[in-house]
Image 1 (tube, rainbow, N blue to C red):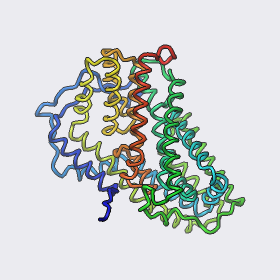
Image 2: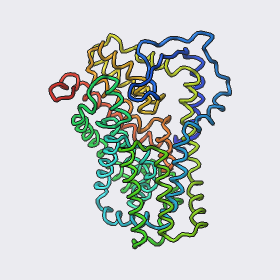
Image 3: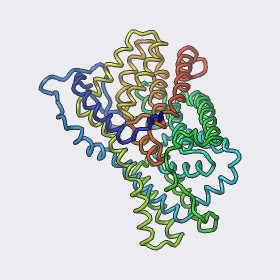
Image 4: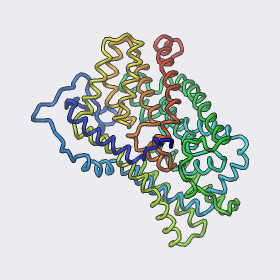
Length: 467
């Protein structure tokens, strides 16, 4: 009997979620919270706790049966920054690979680390989690996915390992962030606790979660090295786009291209921290890297253009998946049910003991992240509700913030509504179901430890300075 494959096509899976989202708009009551400007950023709004109200018949909108088709272009419009990032990065990576610099560097690293993959895995886990912990990095990691996949394949591992080295620490870093301005800072401000307080405790928690992640990822990587057929992506063809060229020697020009690439990435990280640079500036940075790399490599204008277009064209599937994934939130918003969902699940926590309420907050935030994958967006919607609930149930405000972080961050590894998740998987040619099979058991272990940390924070947080 032939074994049935459960590796569904990612686009088909996401499209089915869009249809389900529309069906939910016909059965879930329509309602909304009142909103007010966020004091630190009047252009953003946050909900006002206790103001949820069902919409009257005159204000209710019943979306047409074909609305999900209209919503897909709107979803692509709202995800345009990520979509353009994917196209531009695809083109620039193609130029960098054409120069030979990327492959020369990767194979040089493989030659040095080939017998010690644990160094590469441990280093990536720490570095990428630290970027998310400090300044909320995430989008910046997307361009690195094809590079890490190529490196993993050269070390007889697979694309799952490559995604695990970057996307698992991304989720852990967000979940334990101490200074992330897009998540913990907003949540702490709304909850009324000192900004960046408890950063040391959060960092210690992050190290503990990284230990679990390393064990899970390294064990899988060793299994794939010993038996390639055990890979969750053994059925995926990686011969195109990730194969090594014949010439992988390092020379002066290639070293110069690598220095330009490193300077561009470091410059963007500095700009993001000091001047609030975001995706538009990241796009511009990569375009600049590509142009300078082409000049150093002495590519003609036509050769540069054709290489860029070919690389961008290869990213079409990834870009489309990102746009369709963003459509889910569009449909839920247009159907006026996002606030109803948040109000219903948050209402279940009233009157619960502190320990149970804290765990309930984690569950609520985890579910909410499916509907609102944006970290800052989730903070503006849920924290004004969770903060008063924390007071009523005896949960310290710092713990309420931690529950928000855990619920938002850990599921950042896997939520199909996240444009970043689906874009990264598409860049690495990893089917969504294969990724879930890998990261699902890891998330169970991580959430078990998260519950322990929440309970310890309630009873011993003051003793360790977590308040």
